[in-house]
Amino acid sequence: MTMHRPFTHSRGRQNVLLDLASTDLSAADSRSIDDALSALIRQPHLQLVGVCCSVGPADDAALVHQRVDQVIGVMEQVRRDHGLILTELVVEEDQDLATTPMGGLPDQDALLAAIDDALDDACARNRYPRPAIILMACPTVTGAPKPELNVNSSPVS
Image (cartoon, rainbow, N blue to C red; front, side, top):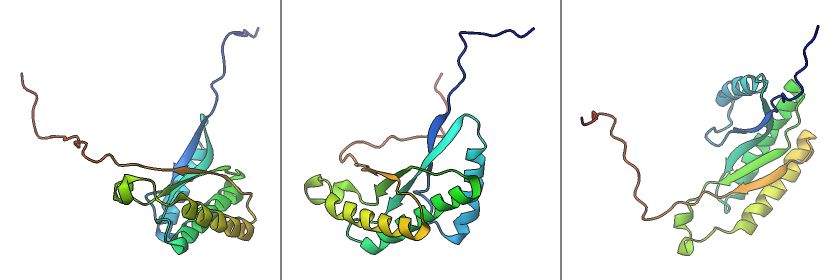
């Protein structure tokens, strides 16, 4: 006899992004990226939906183009190896917002245009569907104290 539990819910899969911001996406990193992808895809409760990467500053269109091309290449490799089409691309600019004039945002129009051009080229070359783009800004707070960790101190009793 099979017992059914009508009020139990199956646990849904959590969407997750693979963070490639700290890698240079070279051939040397290829193996570690493949291992991370395989381990992540094997997790039954996680669903890989996209990639997070950093691009150069907005004024270096060649570097932006290179990074976007490399990331779309990784996304295409995921499609070939695992049958997954990643639909999200989170792009972070490598610029400290505190160094921009008056602490404002850098020229987002130039960055978005460079990303758009690079994405068009990379998706066409790899025959990959265009992912949704999310631009991530990482502001730094000037004047805020940095937390200090002292691992050598013992607790006072």
